[in-house]
Length: 231
Image (tube, rainbow, N blue to C red; front, top):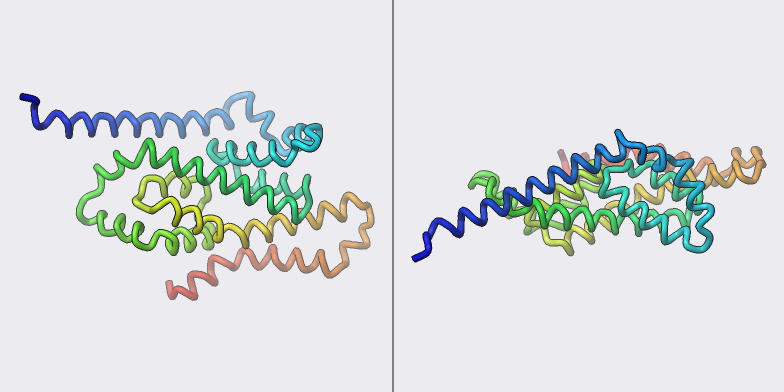
């Protein structure tokens, strides 16, 4: 007769192995872009030169680079600024948003596949109520954290460790990053247009002042959201 304790033990062992793979992946990803020659190809200049030679495939390649970059902990501000500078304020916003959504989804599934079982095994009765609450209020929780600019990539992996449903995570992320993404790409894209035209007189225009105003306003969004929630 098979030992009744074998199955739980095997389950815990598999969960531990998966968690080890997740940790190794994160450490390797961060080390790859920080301490190896690959980092020289992940600068704004290098990526910009590469995309400018890609022709009509540039948008697709950019969104792919953005998604992979998110999973490798490449700074989102670098990729977002690059998208706005190359594709302009509006197309840049679209490509950045799509790339960010692909990256956020991929990181979520990596965290869910490799880390959820181990995370669940560590959750005691005290923490279980919070895990259950995230499952019940997944959309609102994700939306709130996105609006207050919770670190993007850590949250992608971290949410995969919780019980939040993917549809709630996806919709909360999609809606939550729209405002910040548009403001940043509009700001960078507008300045890029002025610089490319060489008409520095356009710096004194409604569009430029509006983009600067939006950019400054973006820093107050987290405080406004927290104040509305009474926290």
